[in-house]
Length: 89
Image (cartoon, rainbow, N blue to C red; front, side):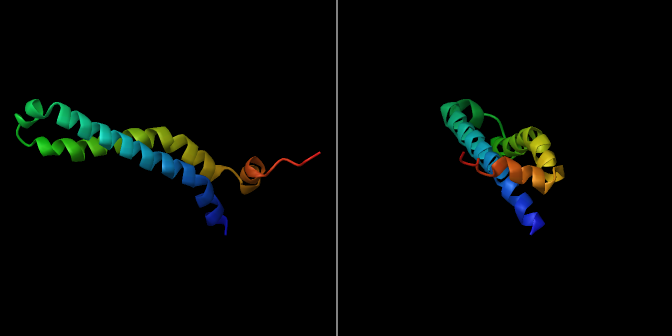
């Protein structure tokens, strides 16, 4: 049960990672088609996409590292307080 709670708090980080990869990949495809003539002149231009995906994943991992570590190390009682609804007075 404890790991399920931690996974619940890590879901926004995973969503950020997926959305970030989607945005950077779409922008890479857009730039590829925009500058297609120049890109095709180089040999092995298809390495642009896997290498770009690798670099994007590295960058996004640097961004999400600290929040993921904090969520994993913070006690469940602290995390539960942050999502509980405020009491009506």
